[in-house]
Amino acid sequence: MGKVILIRHGESELNVKGVYYGILNPGLTEKGREQAKKTREILKGINYNKIYCSDLKRAVHTAEIVNVKELELLIDEELRELNFGIFEGHTYEELLEKYPNELEKSRENWEDYNYVTGESVIELQKRAVNFINKKVNLDENTVLVTHWGIINTILSHYFSNGLDAYWKFSVKNAGVVIIEFSEGYPILKGLNIGG
Image 1 (spheres, rainbow, N blue to C red):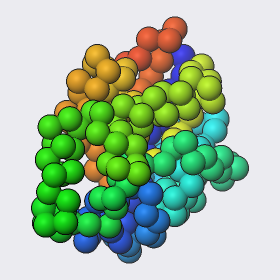
Image 2 (cartoon, one colour):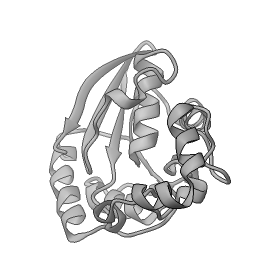
Image 3 (tube, helix red, strand yellow):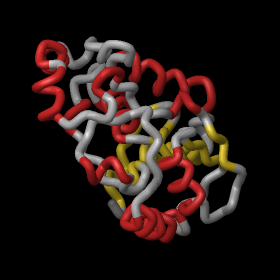
């Protein structure tokens, strides 16, 4: 019986600005570093065999702080956030003005819409699930320090049909989600621990 321990990165500089961003690469705010330190305390009580993280700074910095066992960080771009393409770096209000048609398409068909030069949520989910299938041993405890989109696509994959539950989980910055696998069967053991 193993666990996948999903940790969302701490608050970043662009979380504060309220813009769309996935592959943009801001660092953590002071609050984000403090959130990660609290999550480190939680991880002291959880045994883990490996720790992976997204290659984006906000996830790497969070992983460096929470990695209480000081294991080698396995940095992997497969754990990156959704690529928002032409939406990257813009507020909702700016998008209403600059890309109103694309914004409407993204609302009407959010699962398949690829954000023009970006990727769709379906593509994100395939990437996240493929990562687990290829690289995570479900008989061990593995930490993944990553992003809201990755975490929610994984949760939706295991606990609903495809993307049915994508919008139904609210994972806070530096929040911990634990999925335990019993003979391959997923059980949600914790949501937003510490977040």
